[in-house]
Length: 101
Image 1 (cartoon, rainbow, N blue to C red):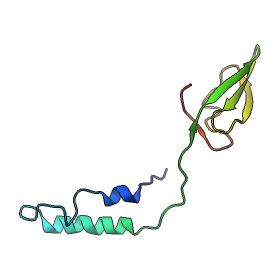
Image 2: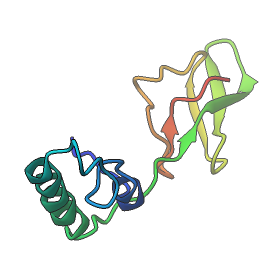
Image 3: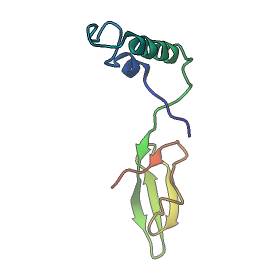
Image 4: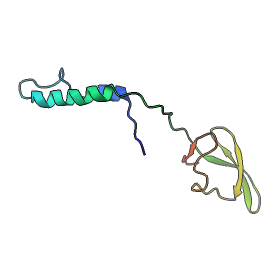
């Protein structure tokens, strides 16, 4: 699975050519770090969306079935009395159903 970073966090990296001990620091090491950071800062941005987290809220229960609602979009589903997170890990709205109730 791909991993993404925020470029602003990268810009805050504490070891930069204008923020190091010039008397005791290794200039080649610092310029190596600068080259890597410059490369990373110039990479194109990925088209990603933040993860939305939600949970299934039980709204009605019968003997063997129950009705659940997505806490994000309100979509309702019918399932066995206890929703199995592994069976419904996401709602159709894209919310990851991993919040505790």
